[in-house]
Image (cartoon, rainbow, N blue to C red; front, side):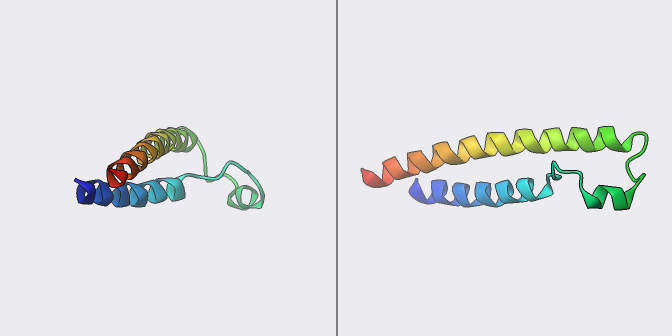
Length: 78
C-alpha cells in the first residue's frame, strides 16, 4: 500500500510541476511589448481558457498531493 501511494505521489508531483510550468506569467512587461499583436481576435480567449484550466488542475493536484502526503505519513507511522 505504501509503495502504491509513494508512486502516486511521485507521478502527481511531476504532473504538478508540468502544470505550473505551462502557466503563463501574470506580468505584462517587456516581452508583451516586443511580441506586439501576437494575441489578436480569438488568441486571448483561448489563452485565458487554457490558463483557467491549468489553474484548476494545479489547485486540485496540490490539494490531492497534500492529502496523500499526510495519509502516507500516517501509514508509515503505524
